[in-house]
Image (spheres, rainbow, N blue to C red):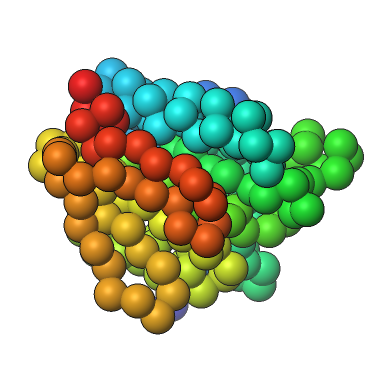
Length: 180
């Protein structure tokens, strides 16, 4: 029986830049680049978070940047949007590579090609590896599902307001603004 060697974060760091995907427990999962609507939603959330983080001096916001969540086997993902509190911001040396830690907030915008199982797997990995808050944004359903450890997920709809809780104190964004 043939076995496939598991990849590492170092292996994928040298992949060509046009290879789009993620490494989940050593297995490379190629993905299509995000679509137009996906990008609009990503930008709306990212720009709102960036304005808030900058105004309050509380951390960094990234889009599609690599985070090493697990080692042996390695998991490297690029959340659509992420927030890292100031005290956890990577050093300048680490900024050029994948960040060797989980973000405080990970935002995943659901693509039409993603299965529910895949989304749930990623949410579980984020929460199990130290991400304190995960938002799963579904542009097709126009919902945002909020995940934290040990609390039942909460799904917000247009008319609700997304808040940052303990991770993003004072942050709020009307769900309707995400899908405008």
